Length: 70
Image (cartoon, rainbow, N blue to C red; front, side, top):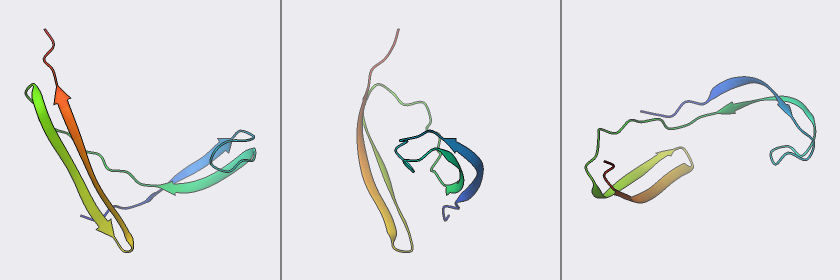
């Protein structure tokens, strides 16, 4: 399934912000990846995320170690 960018409303930016560097308002687009995992047992796990769209691609591997909480 392709990722779809969604337009978000008007944002108010502070002076010297890391996105635009100037104070004021601007609009934009954003997209993200949301998912839910089933409850995982304690121990090592590997989460692999890969995908592409046009000239953009992502390939990341997370090595997770979960501990049980009592």
